[in-house]
Length: 316
Image (cartoon, rainbow, N blue to C red; front, side):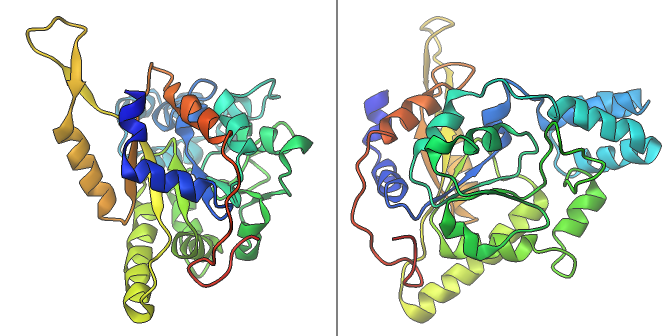
């Protein structure tokens, strides 16, 4: 199965982008699931801490990106003090180690690192001097010119032991999403548009399901296509690492499986609608350790020559 993934032309195309020193990696919560709760369980924990047991149960049963921010708002409105204390309890503890994937990502020659996560794991690796990362940036101070400077950007805010959620902006509640993605109130939409138009991007550990983020993708898709038509230059590639889908193989025992091409095809179609190419990997186990397998392979790549980017620039 390892060869099956490596034989994919899109995989080889992605490898070239990763090794170009121009690619930005966009990290989702999937890489932090061993140490921090999922979005659903996070909102459920917040509702429970704020005395909303029915809302907590509702949150833990859904993955609806429209419902979860609304429930987070309800928890905050009920008891903002308990809400912030719970967020700090979940994300503010001292980090004693990270998943290997974070260390491997930090070793790779990405132009920068962007995340919607609130947890400190990416920053924990980024602060290690051997990785040569130039700084950590967070909402509201997001400067596009630093995307080429090998920085870490926490675009939804950042919580750690010395950064309380009560004193620093985060994006989790519906009202926070509305404010953060309003071009008249926030630098975030402009930052994301420049990133998604001008740079090759790899998405890892995320599904791109948030409505506000999807809307930014749709805008950037149209702008990218317009630029391609006007100037005759191909836009930088955008890729997402997604696990291969499998289904039980009938008549061959309960443990036998085969590739579920219908499920993969539908997922590929949805990503294609926002101009993102799907590259498949074998997840290996429930922890998706296949990601580490790929990243370890990439860490052995040697740097290529650098060609001009979409607008003739990029790291040198």
